Amino acid sequence: MLVIGFALTISVSSYAQGAKYIGANGCKMCHNKPEKGAQHAQWLKTSHSKAYSKLDDAGKKNPDCLKCHSTAGSVNKSLIATLKVDEGVSCESCHGPGSMYKTAAIMKNREQSIAKGMIIPTEATCKACHTGKKPEGHPADKKPWNYAEFNKVINHPDPTLKK
Image (cartoon, rainbow, N blue to C red; front, side):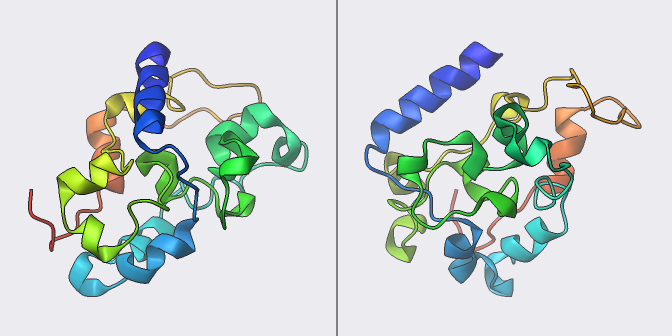
């Protein structure tokens, strides 16, 4: 699974040479509008937005923890434009750095968005962190992680997009 995630990262990065991470506020400009699905407001209610705040002080400095608890903690610092470590697991953890696909003109066309580096997440994307193994210090889950169930919780479609 990690090989698939790594291959996905490499293929997307080859498309998005020079793309920078803009942070959730960069996405919020469009993705908090009710007519577009209010994805930012939905994200704020999820454990992804709170992932960094769940870490203790040692975890907030530990790269092994940050790679799954913060988008900014998992990327090369030279690729960060306006992303903050404390925003947790934000849009670009799953969708890739947004600087090249963030404009409305590009985002209204799925193929163009993908060509500019937008990742359409799959189960493999999620499994980069949701491996089923819990590192030291993690509480036990109430039930095993299941992609189909988890995806229902975090799904955030944009009703204005054509498939």
